[in-house]
Image (cartoon, rainbow, N blue to C red; front, side, top):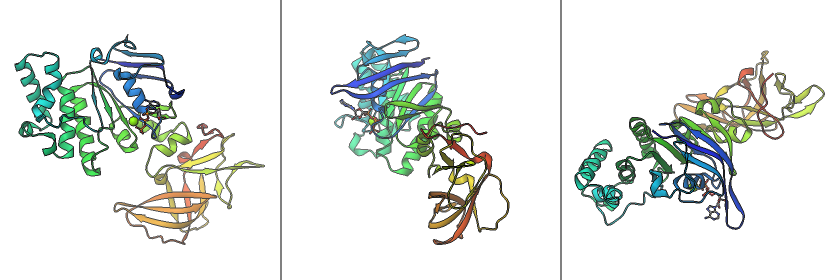
Length: 355
Ligand SMILES: Nc1ncnc2c1ncn2[C@@H]1O[C@H](COP(=O)(O)OP(=O)(O)OP(=O)(O)O)[C@@H](O)[C@H]1O
Ligand SMILES: [Mg+2]
């Protein structure tokens, strides 16, 4: 049982580099919290402060309600899994997994029981006598997981543990990590810059930008209601289409004779997801919501679906269509979206609630 609470946590590195600028996150017992954001936004710094590997400039980190700011990493009862696995190359898999326990003076039969139990869970049973160089990337990753599991920690911390693996293996390991985390019921914080990994793993998703939390919550809620243009363009692939609105006498408007349902006051940017739009041959039929003349610039078939890249509304947009696209570059189409599928953002890029 463990909760992790961050209150207004800050980190300023030497040279006045403000890496984390006041982050508050409450992580429930047994939950998997994913920190996602672009390179340099402070994810690893935050994780290392939770682990005790980095000092905390200001604010508090509490585990199970107890502030641990000055507690050493070994006393925090945390296990961390890194991107580069950090396995000992000269040690067999068994010894790599047993190392931390031996260091703590755990009795030999207890170590043996825990290592074999973890190896069983991770399907590493047949590989215990191999050395890391004799393993595939995915197997090495599992050994790194095993080493974390045997310690039976209160909290798991993961820093981009899958980024060295190819796409297919990453997908498999993602499912394995999620299942393992669920079955072990260990509170976890997982850092990635991969939005798909973040969406699929997270119980709670925290989107970070430049040392701050942009939005935190249930991943699908964030997908459906991004709080800012930053989140809208970071979560989802391809990202949400964003078009700048101009102000005319009637309020916010799009160029090019596009038709737009009444926009809320203060809206400066219109957003809609590629899958929430429909592209048809222009037929002049009445339509509520958005109706946008578009010129196809490129077509990307990916099998089950295709992406139409278009010039429209004074910018560029993507429309997702099921199966094979019949459109070709140069075609003129009409892109439509229902009023409830439109997102509005103000000049600062903050979400404006619909009218
Ligand atoms: N030891 C350090 N000294 C000074 N600045 C640092 C140090 N470590 C990190 N930084 C800076 O702090 C900021 C946040 O770095 P951090 O490693 O936390 O980012 P990140 O979100 O993990 O990025 P990535 O996705 O690339 O791993 C960056 O601007 C980085 O250059
Ligand atoms: Mg990092």
